[in-house]
Image (cartoon, rainbow, N blue to C red):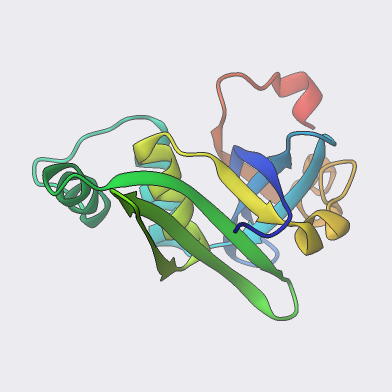
Length: 162
């Protein structure tokens, strides 16, 4: 049985020059609040490629996993994320075959890539929701001039984003 979760979606991938790292920005759907999760540069690149539906000459590992699931009649269900800035963030990919339920512990970026690639819902733990902010997190606000937008969801209005 799934713990209490709220559904979220990716709205942007940002690069913070002061921290010298990219962040993925999630919006919690029901309460329109934001959560930022730090990722590394390669994860940001993979997320952007997946978001833009770019295809490489050879399948990337996430594509290979999707092919494996399809070939062996597994059904991807959803990804879930939990954690905090202090403890770090964690993820789990949930899938099934017939009556059997499976899960695979993955990093949060890998979960998000699979969610985009397989069109899966993203659920975040209720403890993360309690730390969500009603506006864009301050360290990612564009007021400081230290943030670059690497990817912005096509459904987002740029004017309302910052």
